[in-house]
Image 1 (cartoon, rainbow, N blue to C red):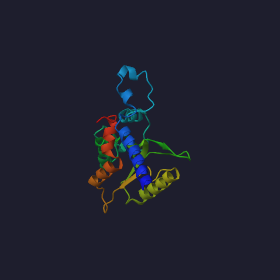
Image 2 (tube, helix red, strand yellow; image 1 turned 90 degrees about the horizontal axis):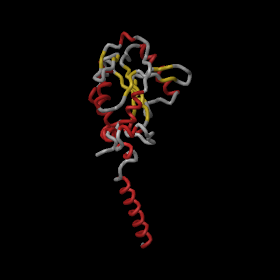
Image 3 (cartoon, rainbow, N blue to C red; image 1 turned 60 degrees about the horizontal axis):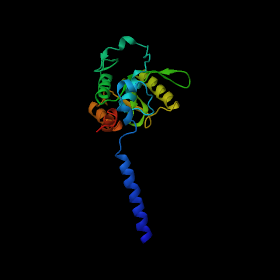
Image 4 (cartoon, one colour; image 1 turned 45 degrees about the vertical axis):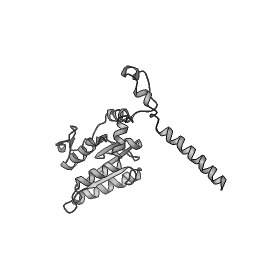
Length: 202
């Protein structure tokens, strides 16, 4: 019995040490406390959430060249998109602080270029996530093209459950804005994300 108690004490001691480490400041704290001038002289190994997002968003890209005349709806961030639903989606990402790019090109293994509706930066997990909104599923030609595109994505490691968000709308199954917002809040851990964007400061 005594050896069980001794083992439990050691385990408790290790847990207490771990919890103590968790209370320390994040690894990038020293970099964030530097003046802007000194930051320019340093190449940080780790980046705080805000810097990471800013650098990702600063990378320029050429959007989808097809049907530019259909870019008629403006988002809160100032982007032009193709539908009112895409305006809502973009505004949710903007409001919740999730960095996004609209119709940013993705080159597939077969050399074909696709333009997902939204390319998102999941800061909490340091990964890129794609979002396709299927807004015309009642149109047979649109539905066929969408299924081919999703198949191509899957062949390139982009699929739901991993790194692809799918939303849709039809006359019999309309887009649900509130449910979408709640799902994004949960999936992107927005409460945690807001702390990360501030560099982990409480």
